[in-house]
Image 1 (spheres, helix red, strand yellow):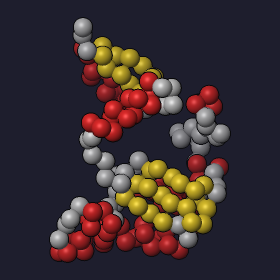
Image 2 (image 1 turned 90 degrees about the vertical axis):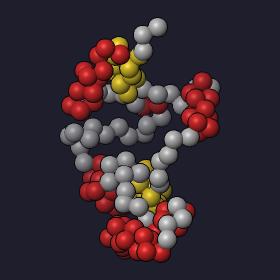
Image 3 (image 1 turned 120 degrees about the vertical axis):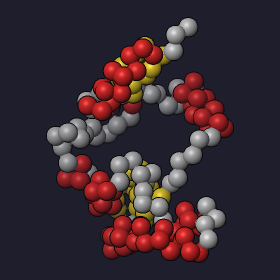
Image 4 (image 1 turned 45 degrees about the vertical axis):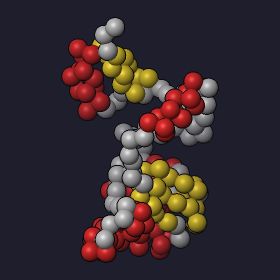
Amino acid sequence: MRDLGADTVIDYRTQDFEQLLTGYDLVLDSLGGENLVKSLRILKPGGKAIGIAGPPDPAFARKAGLNPVLRLPIAGLSSRIRQQAKKLGVSYEFLFMRASGDQLRQIAALVDDGVLRPVVGKVFDFAQTPQALESLAKGGLRGKAVVTLPA
């Protein structure tokens, strides 16, 4: 992982990142829950945690054009994490992921140019898709599982 630019490599199965990291500007959280709470605590004052696993925040509700009746429960869903963030002097923002052909083309260009280097853990034939999913569910696969289609 160091050759990909990582300064610190953490094995999430045996190490608690909250005990090893501190003073970060930004955390991109893809798990939510307790992981998001820990992520808030490794940020330096003024830092930001961006969650893609929720909970949605009021800014998301506004951007989505939800009516005020729906905005209230959305705000309630994230009130606890936003309060924790405020106490720590950091902020929380929800990022709604949506499919975008334009974004995928931009990412593909970054991969083609060598700016991004995906780590492929294992390649599976299409017929092995159940094994690929089982491998992902078990964890321990270092990198992405890739399923190839027959030619």
